[in-house]
Length: 119
Image (tube, rainbow, N blue to C red; front, top):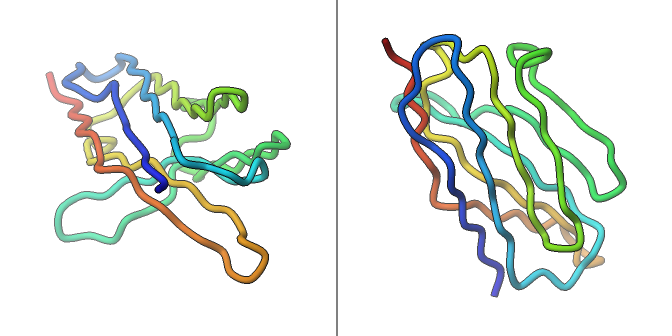
């Protein structure tokens, strides 16, 4: 059974930094994409950043230059270093995992961690 557990959310002032972590378990496929999405109540979940096991990264335009995604493939971890945070970054951040079983692309989500940027 695949499980994703996030940590690292919290309250931070504008201009501050936070680091999110996500631990994946139950993965049998070593080639996968892990990353982060976020959602504000009443809006659609949106991509923040993703990264493949091979190192290819994808960032949303609104975080380029401020957020950095990284991985520890040996331990099935993904991180999101967030800097220069803005109030509009306030959201629930969800860890995301995608891999192929040879037939379909399978997607999994963590339970989410709240990030609040406020004075």
